[in-house]
Length: 100
Image (cartoon, rainbow, N blue to C red; front, side, top):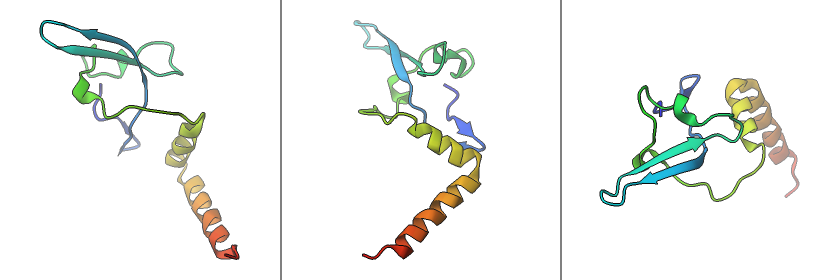
């Protein structure tokens, strides 16, 4: 994987589905192939040059649930900071104007 993955100079985690796991029983070596749900092909183009599989130590965690389209919110706030500031301002106004 092109590790770490950066967007606009900031480190971003990505969540992709594991599509293949190869485990060598005699050595315990494990190779993992991932794919993004919105991608037609697997993630080999995202991996470092010459790397065709991920190793378990390159996996940061495991998703246990999902919220559809929630990732778009974080992408939009990263690409267009004005949206982030508008959201923070709206939440601030909500806190200030709330009665309790």
